[in-house]
Image 1 (cartoon, helix red, strand yellow):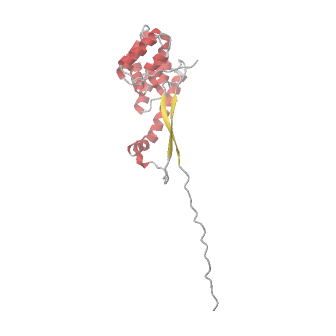
Image 2 (cartoon, helix red, strand yellow):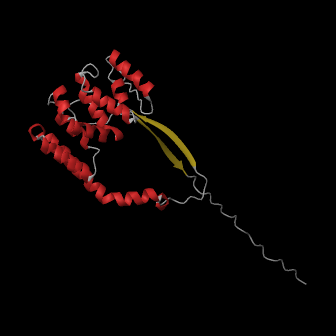
Length: 231
């Protein structure tokens, strides 16, 4: 069986509506994952809201939905805000069994002191539910992300502003560039795991071959001694 992952990252509302209708009419969870790849904030918020309605999102797909939105660069901050502001609504609709997974799935992309403080407060406000080793592991990841950014952000920012500072190898001969298209398909986040990557990505790898320089050796020169004629 070959898994096919449909993506709607660049799609608008019509494409999203199609994927949602397919999800509702079939058992193919790939359409649900495709919807979480969107970059439209209105669609992301709509998905988060639908999570609270079992007639819109199947209860067994709730963790998959939230985990994949948490892995979305735009969806991550929106999912954190939704979890913080709508905690009581989530608990009323879904119970308390999902909260530890929701909390942990957010941590991988958080990397600022403000976000770390927000997660600490969220844990402390709901310590009766979030008193978990998994939660503490997530906080450790956020703290490590913050420390890494503190050490490297200035240097990386400077390089991005002036990429010409990168050292390039000089070449004196024409180069041949071979380009290969690489398509990566990642698996869907499964509930209860700590992996949150879900989408596909394509990248272009280039290999450069520089011909070896040609060296020409001059032919040796032969000198003939002058001929002397006797008188």
